[in-house]
Image (tube, rainbow, N blue to C red; front, side, top):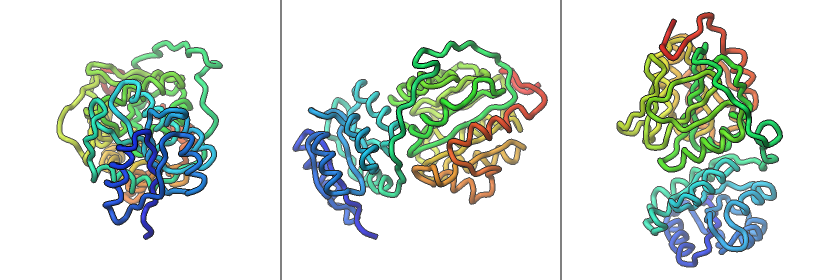
Amino acid sequence: MSPVRVLVVDDSAFVRSVLSRNLSEDPEIVIAGAASDGEEALRAVRDLRPDVITLDVVMPRLDGLAALKRIMVEHPTPVVMVSSLTGEDTQATVEALALGAVDFFQKGAAGSLTWRKEELRAKVKTAAQSKVGALRLPLQSPAGGLPYARKRHSNKFANVVVLGCSTGGPRALRELVPMLSPDLSAAFLIVQHMPAGFTASLAQGLDKLSRVAVKEAVAGDVLGRGEAILAPGGFHLRVTSEGVVVLDDGPQVHGVKPAVDITMESVVSAYGKAAIGVVMTGMGSDGTDGAGFIKRAGGCVAAEDESTCTIYGMPKSVVKAGYADAVIPLNKIPEWLAKVCGTIPALLTAAGRH
């Protein structure tokens, strides 16, 4: 295989140097070029056609978010955002992931340059395997940009749907969740592999675009029909038989926390055959064991089709294990959910099976 050609974009010459050196020490990576701001990056992408771009969030003239939007329209290329941990930077990074950036790399607290070489190289090489498409027209919030007038439908529902994803997930969720109908007889749980500090912004962004209410989980939340609860970074999400959210600070599973398997197993324990699993884009096999629990309990499982995945890893694992009832493109998942939700005669409540 040819080495991964990387374009390094950062307004700091020192950071560009450190990034370039750390990446180029890996024989499977070569530095195609460097740029100091978004304008230079656009010219370099056009001229050099790199395999992957590392892109700083905060830069003069044209910042990382604005540059990303144009890159994804003009020359779609896998991008790894380079982010600090400040609040403003965090929001921009989540927005970048929703717009199509494959992953992000944290510089460290307060912008310190505590480089984690192996992590950075792994993210770049994973990004090189990803499939990115041209950026679609920006989604608008419901009702012509006005806040959607929501009311809690009920704590009764026929199904609990677990949506699980990893690499490429924020962009997939940004497409999928706004298409979910609050009239479905279902409560939704979302598990996106993401560290602490980023999931709140992800939930807020999805909530603004969607007809279902979306929030980051807090211990003690209760499942409700037409509502989506997002697992917070750094915690596994479980539910009790009363429909109450429990946040688990136990060890990582598959090297991640939250893990899809943990949430799926918990939903099966609480709601049995009413569990529905949807496994979407991501590297690895998280969600496969959970899909197996759902199938053995009599529930339904869908895997995202390779044609719409950024990384066809997690769904592929589910399909290979024989657990997928349906393998469908992302835009068809809401239609599938409409068919399978509410097919169980007895409604459930937050107090469990009835």
